[in-house]
Length: 444
Image (tube, rainbow, N blue to C red; front, side, top):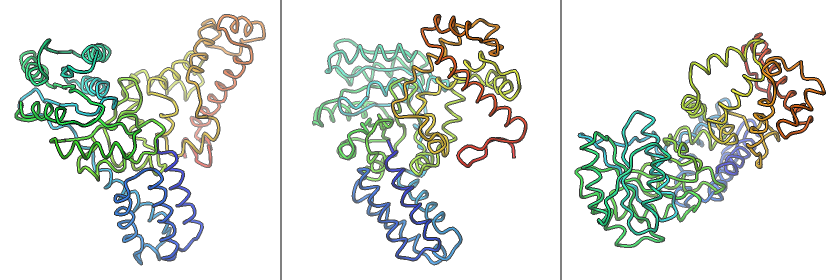
């Protein structure tokens, strides 16, 4: 979502760094470029105005202008202000003093509210909680059945009450949760195509049915400024505790993510990144600021790896990769682990400098089914061939191509990639390191 903004911000900083020693005029001109980049990303005008004013006040100080690497210091100020703009720190869901904690999902129809309810349940279930999904949308056709299916896919329990109103369903769901040791109740309320009084009143009535609730507003980040306007309207009528931004992996300009917290005064608690139920992340303002500035997000990458890959198996695979024992069977396992972490283009964006290192080798239209082709080729080999690829002569390659529905050329490309990875791992294990895009990877 932030690729264009990131590119423009980096261009502005590069232009500043080309001046060497900065004057006040250089800083003002550079920050004008930053301002234009934010406005073009659809960030709220008042938010941009305040943000640039705060950055300018600090960046124009004599200590910055006369110091070493003034551009780096200005980037540091922009990062600090971005973190503040986005909310300073992650804000968790506040647990109720006595379980279950009641979470109310609100939002317009089409914002991804029902799917997000399932994603949230899945996230908490993986953390050891027992969530219960409660269907309180009695208006949209098939809404209850949709949530039932989402719950089944997420591997969590589902509850509804036939022929009852939304408030009665919510109360019965919480009572059922308390009686059956569920510690989290997630209530999917009705959405509308536009904000109306009946919709607001229902959510208010559900809120007032409990001593403590967490009301999360789900907004579609793809709708830009409209998303922020919707959030502001809901904020006037409801006791909002947090926002969930969906479709943050889309091709929108990202203004909603940068404006929502500032305009509403409500923290962003989660972001949706993908259609799968695993595609929900806790929102960390500092990590998001790093992504926007092109610094990557190593902590989120590590968390994804920990969730997707068995730690003991990963350690064994790493040991093999750094030894001469790494074979095509291990290569296939390595690719399978990478796939578990999510869409490959999204994973690459979390690696600092990855976009520059990859150059044109990761096109936007990269088809991840190519990884399935790799799996098919390796699966068509004998165990002996997987362990010793040097055995693959012309006749064996033709046999494998026929068995996997590929060509000999595809097999040659795969073997080349495998051998290149082997060379890189060998260089890292020998202590020489590998130079990629001007950055040394491996031992020093």
